[in-house]
Image (cartoon, rainbow over the protein chains, first blue to last red):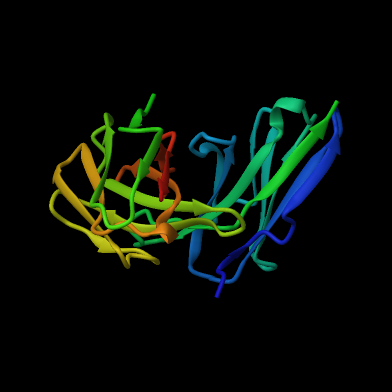
Length: 113
Length: 113
């Protein structure tokens, strides 16, 4: 039973446009959400996070939105750049979980010049 | 910057061999994790440790064991390697608080022949 779902395996976007990556979760105990970016043959790199007490967090070109009632979060990248082409993983954790993260299966983003 | 170092980037072993994967972090983090990443399956947690000599099973511990004798070092052991353990193995560390991101090493691509 997947607690964190990324329903789009891939996404293709034109350079300069907005990329929107989506993630759904089922566990209402999750209170901390993260996005990681992964290039081939490298480890995931932490991008941005959001606590459940917020509905938006922004860091440069990256913004994460959290809709708790819908159990949905999204990552917006504006403007998209070819270097953003990577696999993006959504992850979540619950209080008292000793830092354990539950990961989605990832979405491969391709940004075309 | 957090540095998580995995001892090998690429490793080739034979079925039945005992395999050791080593991971060292330099940020005095309490938590350390071992994942494997397979296409279409995302990151799956094998084992984690929240303190020296402490370990907890993750989602897929079968065929693996771990050792944490020192805070900075977390070892993953394949007791008798099998071909279905061919995968990318990722180590991560984080502070004890569950609202802090995990930081990953670059991974070990392990092939079992």
